[in-house]
Length: 146
Image (cartoon, rainbow, N blue to C red):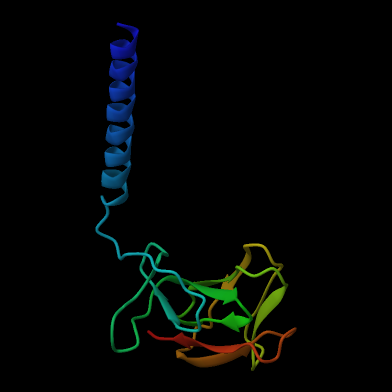
């Protein structure tokens, strides 16, 4: 009888674990917002109105209320945002990096280890090239679109 009790307990635990995984999956799929994607490979990052990164498809993306520049593997991502939007430098590397506008309109700094800092995007639409002050080969562009 002990063997059948153990089998029953194992079946009950398996059922509870399966139900928990199913519930977690349903909770994660319950939003109609854009699907978050990972940045950091030098591609353009565009964000939805809730601040989540998403791939806008062809055509270069759309402007938005907030956005994140990712520093990773000694590269910076391009970003497209609305005028005056919050922009964040997310440093996913282990070395300190900056995102400094070539014309001086903004500067962000973040130590390594998934740290970040934030500022406000320029209010004038246009392209704003930027670079890392510490690593001159790290360059990208902030595009501000109305």
